[in-house]
Amino acid sequence: MTVGVLHPGEMGAAVAAALRAGGHDVAWASAGRSAATAARAGEAGLRDIGTPEAMAGACDLVVSVCPPHAAVAVARELRGFGGIYVEANAVSPETARGIGEIVTSGAAAYVDGGIIGPPPREPGTTRLYLSGPAAGEVAAAFAGTPLEALAVSARVGDASAVKMAYAAWTKGTAALVLAARETARAEGVEEALVAEWARSLPDLADAYARAGRSATAKGWRWVAEMEEIAATFAAAGQPDGFHRAAAEIYRRY
Image: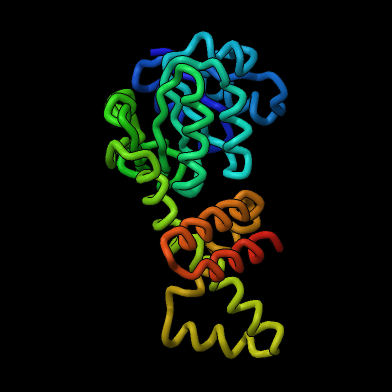
């Protein structure tokens, strides 16, 4: 199978490398991309196909792995594509369904996806949840690779719902611990709070350090993810204010 990956950032390059490990011909499109993206694509051994238009004409399967705020624009780059398009970004079920309408307005099939875990460099660390009529076919393409692909259902939006609910906790609580300590610092009681953490919540100091490192490195892309989670909560009849606040916390980083 010839697979295109749009666009190989840290996660996308690892997904592409996993597909290559599964024996697939994996391509990327260098047009308009940065030197850092080109370096990652080279390290992953990807074939440069030039443009998204060329990818649309040459690939059986295209996987979109990009910051959530760019997911819609990336889907529009593949107009005219006739294979299977996998939307593997951290977006709400509603956004996922909207992207599906863009993709299927041509001849393409559409699969909604959500990645949970770090960049998949070894088996057992990372899952790709998939939903849509062709979810099983896409899951089969990842067989034998470091990325475990799981078909959730034939209903578009379900895979994104899994991702949103999962990240609501992992990244939402990371934002909360950052805000809690910042509040203690502003009130002049940070030392006392950290001492109490050590006594009653000994794992929280490490959680705070991990949250700070992640927010510094990736907070710019988590802003939109928190907004997508907030939209998911609102659509489910749940309060959405917490994750809108989490978006603001990450925006400050």
